[in-house]
Image (tube, rainbow, N blue to C red):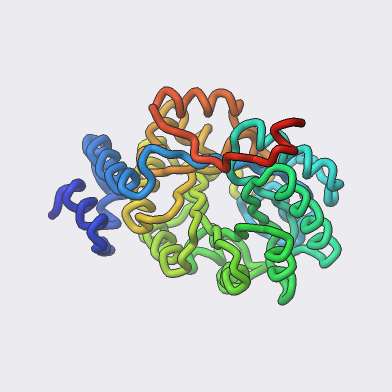
Length: 334
């Protein structure tokens, strides 16, 4: 058996780890965790140095979703007491972009609940995106659900840089999480965005009663999908959802999952995403040795930690924020 460092050096040379090696990462002893993290960091540093990408979400449409995803507080099967509202106005979306700019965020993520957007909603988002690009030069990611044929094209023309649609879990486990749409529906949406020249973003949720092999399969599926950005979410089980009370994760296992994603998808943006605060807890800083990206601020219906705390964490680690600089004179003088 190769050491973790030997495995990492092989990955940097272009070698792919085997299924057995992938499982061994998740099954590794806690005594090996620091060595595993260091080895994953060697890969991360090779491709990204010590830079960290910051992302921020705005939830532009909350609840009111007909899908039956078991993890989601916004789904039709959820009784969680969340705020519900239809698409917010353009001024609210622009205000969120302004806040993202002030926090040195590189990617602003416009998210809306639902199976997929109406044409009117696509036009609404597209109009906001054009102004965001003009005023703040932020990278914009849209996450609006399943897309119709021409909607991806319209988003691209408006300036959307990236489209997010998570696979969430493995193909084998998918029907245990939702039955109102298929795994293929999710993959096809990512492919549809890619076909229009939009950078694909797709990730996972860990801790939903999946097997270790399911987690490995997720990582390999994202490699095949060629997702440029991979959000790794850790289940924050919300009361009122079918997965209420599920508590399978500990901080050390979460770190091993992040290492696995780096070993299998070495060149990609690996983002520590939803649930990091409640699952990684005091070990949050260690997540940025395999990962190179985080969300700042709140998530969709759950709170994150203060952005200033995240900035302090990065400073303490000696990492550098990687964000879009040199905004227009219009922004710097306003």
